[in-house]
Image (cartoon, rainbow, N blue to C red):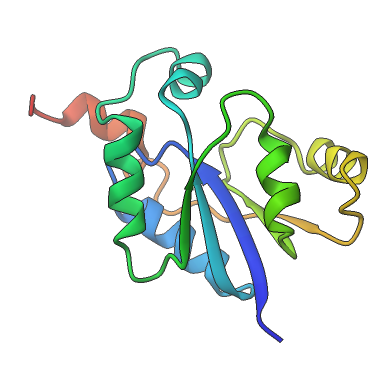
Length: 140
């Protein structure tokens, strides 16, 4: 049985670390759903506006062969989409703000008691991280 895997992120300035994140996630089930963060949430969590708009980032992620379904993230309640998609596994990046316990607790509140939460391994965090790459980038 193919499991549905769901992950979340800004994915602003797509780089090899993002692709490794998707590979790790997909290896846990087979059907990968990626939620792309809204511009307002990127700014709120990262303290700066994204380089690329939410629509541009969604289009980039939608066109990756490894991604089975790309969706625009929720502006306010992240668990609405999780409940709608009913993933078997939620994948968190090594540097994402949510804790596994916090996500599990919120999953229970929306009736998803069997969904697992997995924290994925970093891919060259000293070099393949959006905040580092943005400092090295040129203007578009």
